[in-house]
Length: 172
Image (cartoon, rainbow, N blue to C red; front, side, top):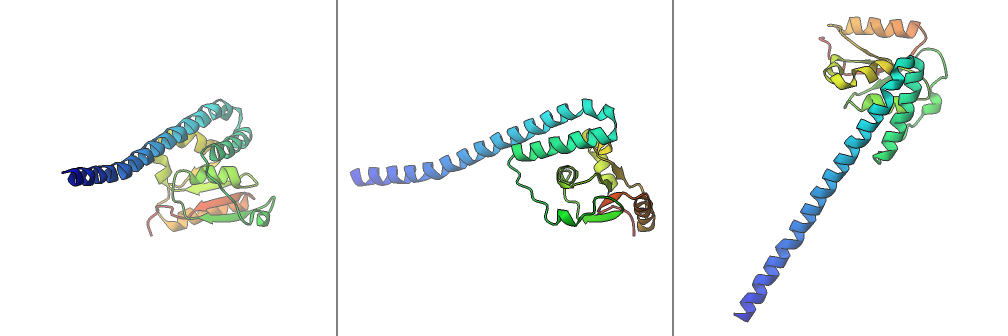
């Protein structure tokens, strides 16, 4: 019975350690998520009043807040080849749009103001609309690639730097 008792204790303790690791990992993930959302809310609150000052001031402010947010949440970002982007004149940058944070990354990392052409998918993110407007995001409402291309061409003819989030959500 003593050997059986020792064996049962070993089995019990063997189950506790992995369970404790899982619990600790879950608690850590929840704390990080709370930190992330707190920093996002703080950035939004700090940016709202600035957006009434005009697009240029709002863009510069939001870009700075975006950089601080990324640092605060431990997102190590790096833009490779930035020196190849001309300081003025038309230029096209293309990105495979994967999340609502793409716009934030462009604001934080690009060395000049840009016009971002994105699909209506971003329109569903209601709380982001004021920030998107302040960052110069133009949401495409076109039904065809030809119409989207025409809008891109117009922005380039105005001398803008354009980031085209390539999944535009238009019909072929």
